[in-house]
Amino acid sequence: MSNKVLMKGNEALAEAAIKSGCIHFFGYPITPQTEVAEYLAKRLPKVGGLCLQAESEIAAINMVMGAAATGTRVMTSSSSPGISLKSEGISYIAGCDLPCVIVNVQRGGPGLGGIQPSQADYNQATKANAHGDMHVIVLAPSSVQEMATLAGEAFDLADIYRMPAMILADGALGQMMEPVDFDARESREIPEKTWVTNGHGGKRKKNIVNSLFMDPAALEASVVERFKRYDEIKEKEVKYEEYMTEDADIVLVAYGITSRICKSAVAAARAAGIKVGLLRPITLWPYPSGALAKLADTVKHFLVVELNMGQMVDDVKLSIECRRPVSFFGRTGGMLPTPDDVVEEIKKIAGGIA
Amino acid sequence: MDFCNFRKKIIAVVGHYGSGKTNFAVNLALSLKANGKRVTLIDLDTVNPYFRAADAKEKLSAEGIGTIIPEFANTNVDLPSLPPEINRVFDTVKDLSRPDEFFIFDVGGSDGAVALGMYNKQILAAGGCEMIGVINMYRPLTDTPESAVADLREIEDYSRLKVTSLVNNSSIGVETTSETVLASVKYAETTAELMGVPLLSTSYIESPRVSLSDEDRFFKMKNATKQIF
Image (cartoon, rainbow over all chains, first blue to last red; front, side, top):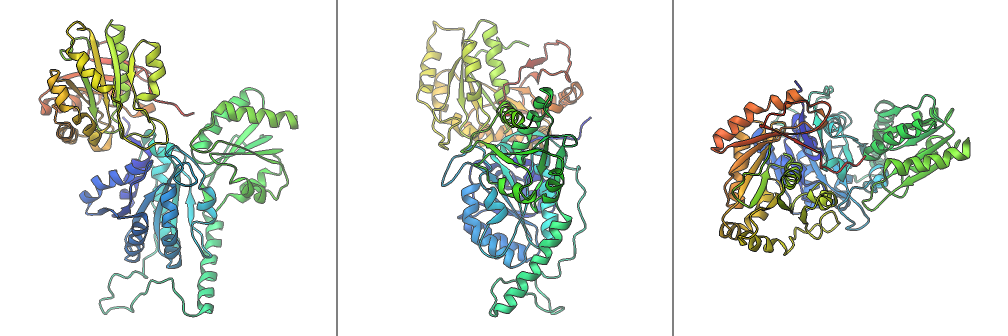
C-alpha cells in the first residue's frame, strides 16, 4: 500500500512548509496560488501556528521580515503582480540577512496580465527580485512532489545561508493534482541561530537586525561578505537534472512545467531518430552553468523552451560562452506549448545540423 | 453501476476540493445519457481557475449532453459570475412532460458550495435535489471519516441543502491501484454511516493498474481531466 496522498501543487507546498517547521504565514490572496493560504489557514492553527491574511502584499512581506528576525520559520506566497509588490521587503530581508521562503506561482504578465500559467518572472526571480547588490536562492519545481520536496529544501537553504529562498512555480503546477510522499526528503543540518532578536534575557549581547548602514565602508564590507556566501552557494548548491543527454546532438533547456512538456518531446523526437536530450535546471539561482558548459563540448545545438519570450536564453549563452547556437521556442501570456510544437522546433534544428 | 433510480431531477455533486467531483459529474452525465436519459451538466464552479467541467464541453456536446458553462470559464477574467440560463433549469424541472431529464450541477469544492446556496429557494421550490457528496480518502484534509463528515457538514451549511448520498472516489491519481481503491471502501462505509446516508458506489478511473470486478458497487469512469502534456 502506498503512503502517498493526492494533492494540488499549492497544497503540497503548504503541507511541506508545515512539515518543515514553518509556523507563520503572511499573505494576500491572488489566483492561481490562493490554495496555499487557504490550506495553511485550515492547518496552521492546529499546529500552534498563525496564518494571517494581511491588508496587502507589502504588509505581508514586512510581517515576514519581523517573524524571520525572531528565528521563526516563515513563508509568504503570491503570484506575479503580488511578488512585484513585495520587492522592497525582499531587499530589506536580504539586507538584514534573514531567512524566509517566498513562493511565486507565476501567471501571465506584464501588468495585471492573466491567471493562466506562465514563466515570465524568470528574470525578476533570478536577477532583479529587488534593489541593491543581492540574490535570492531560486528553486524551480516540476511536479507536485517537487513542490513539496523543494519547499523543504528552500527552508533549509534559507536557514543555512541566512537569506530568502524562492520557490518559482507556475499556475499549472499550483493547480494540478498528483501523488505526493512527504517522507521523500531528509532535512539538512541547520546551524544554530545565534543572531535572533528573541530577547537576550540579560544573558547575551543584544542582537540587532537592520539593513541601514551609516558608514559606506561598513555597508560595502557587509555586501562583500554576503557575496562570499553567494560564491559558496554557487559552488555547493547547484541542482539540475540531465535526461538522455549522453549522446544528444540537440539539448533542450527547460525548467518547471515546461520541462515536462520537453520530456515528452524528447521521447517523440528520439522515436523519429533525432538524438535529443534535456537539461532541467532545478536551481535557477545558482544556475547550472558548469553542466551546460560541459554539454557544449559535444552537443551541437541548444534549444531553450519557456513560457515567456526567451528570458533564460542569455543564461545558456553565457554558460556555454556562445560556443554553440542557442535557439528559443516558447509561448507566453498563459498559453502552453504541446510536445508536438516542441518536436516541430527540434526538427527544424535537426534539418540544419544533419 | 447505473444511476437511473434518482427520484430528483436535479443532482448536485458536491465535495472537498480535488475529491474528483468534476470527473464523477462528467461520467455520471455520460452514464445517464447512455441509459437513454436527457442530461444537462451545469458547471457551477466559481472557484477553480483551470481544471473544471468546462474542459469537457466538446466531449459532452458530441455525446448529446447539454452544458451550461460560465461565460468566463478558462479565460483570464477571474470573476465568479454564473450564466442566467441556470434559472431556466428550475422551470424545466417542474415540466411534468419531461420525466426522463436530469440536471447535474458540478459544484466548486468546499466553500464553493456557496454558489449552490444561491439557488437554494429555487431548488426547494422545484422539489429539492439529490445531493451527492464525493469523498476521497487520499486527500489529506478528508482522510478520515470524521474529517470527511466535517467537510460535508460545512458544505451543507454553505448550500443550506442536505447531502442525500455519497460516492467514494478515493484516488491517488496515476498511482491508483485495485488495492488503493479496495482499501478505501471501509472508510467510505463509515463516512456514509456517520452521515446517515447511503453509499451509492465506489468509483475509479479506468487504467491498467485497476482491475475490479463488475460488481454493482463499483463505477468505472473515463478520465475527464484536462491533460497538459
